[in-house]
Length: 239
Image 1 (cartoon, rainbow, N blue to C red):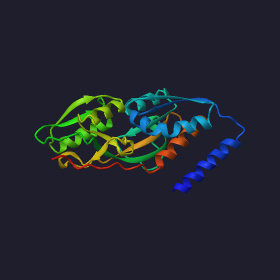
Image 2: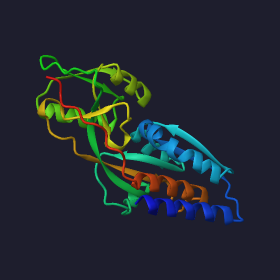
Image 3: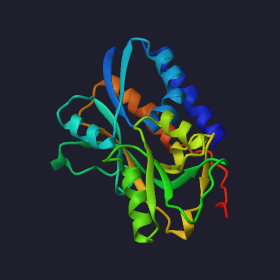
Image 4: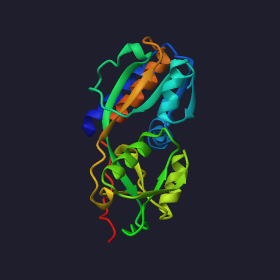
């Protein structure tokens, strides 16, 4: 896999160097904040180096808002989290006004830090994004299904704020496994509740025909999403 990835990257570099046609344009790209932190640093430098005449305008928001905004053509392309699974690379139904160019399923996990202590006599302390967040919805649903009391102690949309609160030991949260920061720890479901299941991750556009610039960005993102991610260390629940 490592050699194959290197060969494909060399091929892309060669094509870029030999191409006499400079691709220009502006891409309005919407992405959830946790994937912006995880994904964009891995691709943005190479993308900018190989496509210096493409302007990338990135906005972070909840997937619910991104899905609404792309129907209004406020974005050219979005990376969206879907509270359901879709077959890999199968077309998304066109009647909802979106076209899917890539999808994968990712496992949802509980995330904490080594400083967090779960007191079984107290509600599970949650750090979450605002209402409408898939992570928040799925975590609360599973705690309720297991009759486990919970309390939201901190609400913030930005992943940096969520991470800082978790690192301080204030509580736990739910994230897609591939977006868990290396400074945090994947833990078993609290108090023997059920696994959270999976969700879909998809690249969506409002129009079926994308510009050349959007096609290039889609290629970059799709390749990185297909690569296996590093698994984080698991921590057993505190007594």
